[in-house]
Amino acid sequence: MITTITTTTTIAATAATALGAMGTVLLIILLIAKELSDSHDSDKLQKLGRNSMLVIAPLLFTFAAIVCVKIIDVL
Image (cartoon, rainbow, N blue to C red; front, side, top):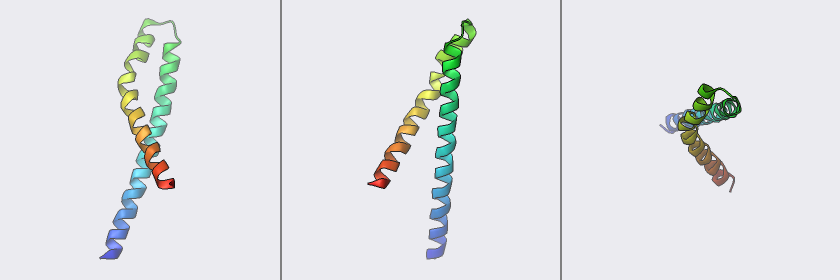
């Protein structure tokens, strides 16, 4: 029984870490794409840059939550 709970907890923690890493990489890629599209002269690309904040904002909150959890783990 204890082995099953320990294994399940370990798998869940590993999956959460992988999901957090993927979210962070996605956030970095989207921020780079936003900066590149904002700096371009094309109206379509500038509109894409403005609209990309709809995706970036929730990822920023998720990133902040990940950082807070990691800081609490260290303390």
